[in-house]
Length: 131
Image (tube, rainbow, N blue to C red; front, top):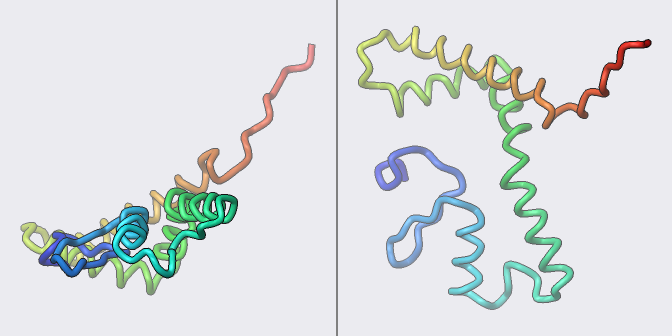
């Protein structure tokens, strides 16, 4: 898969024509057009709306907890840092151990920053000073 897309991606599907689809919404649309039975999205309008809503939610919002589960545990962070260095940064003239350390620290900071954003936490209440 990596030679066809240039990067490890999930989800990734190769069509019978040899085209690579690498986005869940596009994959669902392709399946609906080419393989109409059984339908991927329910034919009932209400159920179809809920299915598309859930897909959009998963596609747009569940990457945040995915970041947490990928990078917050030391063993997973080490494995992923090794893969990123091996697949994307292998030709950089810097020791790979230093690159892996940089990637782990960067991702840990990114996850911590995302947890502090308003997206993760309710909006702070306004702080009015007493008169």
